[in-house]
Length: 433
Ligand code: SF4
Image (cartoon, rainbow, N blue to C red; front, side, top):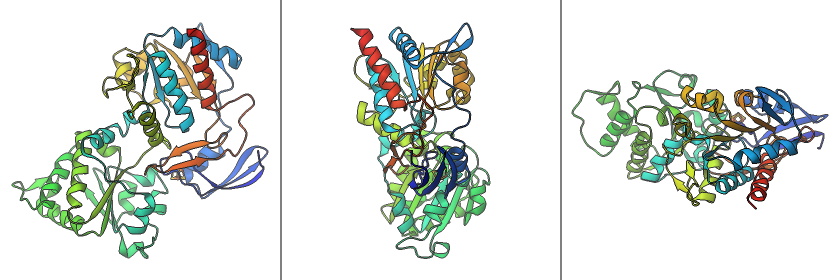
């Protein structure tokens, strides 16, 4: 690969997909990362560390190095003999890999789910119920005069979100310090709340009540209580009035809203609040997507299957049922007998009951790095890091697709996820003949 400077590289860590990184490459190693945040620097500068050393198969409890061909053959054999395949992950790899994963799920009559089922799945359910009022991040920067982060801590999880999109000047907001207000609504004073213009503390688990109260007030109704979620009615009235008075408001929301009590009902209510506000002024909302391509995983799933996640092919056509075909639920019920895991680490993040079942089934793990899942996988296949060692496409949190460039070569004989998945798919097709 080209030694020297690479400009306008997309960061493949969080859903901001910042596309202004400047990388220096020497001897096939990234030595500097200009513009990236601390998380980005850690990812790019340590791309060569903690790698899966090579294809391996676990036999009698011990991991045995094998050739790529042998690892693929073993993976094909396991999937061909599975009764209930679960394909999971996908949010930290590029879109072409997604396509190959759905083909495998379809071929094997299995289930395919992505990590949105444990993060913004409720956002999608809320959207399916109430629609979506969307904006581009550029529009936010150019036009918004009131930004609310609800249940989201961007300074921690999306470190450049505020700097690039809500603290930066835009076409119609020349001086963001005086012309734009940033509020944080959360149950505790996060570091983002500390740098915001206003912190609104609500009681845990009361998001739905607070949003519903704001909806009522925005619509001119009176509340017959003194407080909602720890906020006095006079505070709520004042908040509703400021929201109505904004020229262009944007609500960014995170897992504090999607995964707290109420879940997709919180999102449903938030969407309806935004719709109510649009009777008076312009408001949009946007989920703070975590994994860099979780939005892409939803888009490619919808493009291939008609549904964004939790898709089952057991009947030969795609069926959608969150709660039934979502990875955690399937594992907790002990339903999946094989897990094909792609660019995720469920062993590190899933609840204990799901993990217990993972210990009893065959796991085929595709990942560039060693992780908790690779420790228990029956087959491990190392892959190239998308956006660093191979190209591809990913989708930003506002739905914008961006091209990921290759900047260094992957380790010898290490291929992109899409190539490994295609080999597994071809093997399955051959096994059927
Ligand atoms: S904010 Fe996110 S996308 Fe941007 S540089 Fe940091 S980790 Fe990368």
